[in-house]
Image 1 (spheres, rainbow, N blue to C red):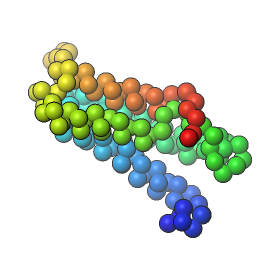
Image 2 (cartoon, rainbow, N blue to C red):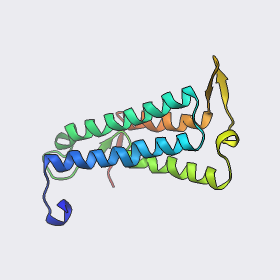
Image 3 (cartoon, rainbow, N blue to C red):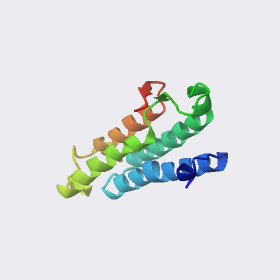
Length: 140
């Protein structure tokens, strides 16, 4: 509605961020958990991923005006935008279509100190870390 009316508001920006964190942060983590990444270390990494998404959106909301250089548009992103987590959902979709779920999850699992880690969850750690990085990504 705001885009159609070409208006913005602080409340709209915050609601947009809330929708983004649910859609691109919590949902991919829940999908990964449902696909079998249920070990203790998996849950820690998935929580880290969601926390990175929240941090990334908070930083964007605070710095968007400064990054736009006084204009309406941001010229680049610091860290990867949270919608890039869609790639993780695609990976989980491909795994599911190939039957690679639960015990058959790609790359198996590792038991460290009695707790399970699925190496595939490290993609979530990488994605979260890139979201909160200071690397500049051009806005297309």
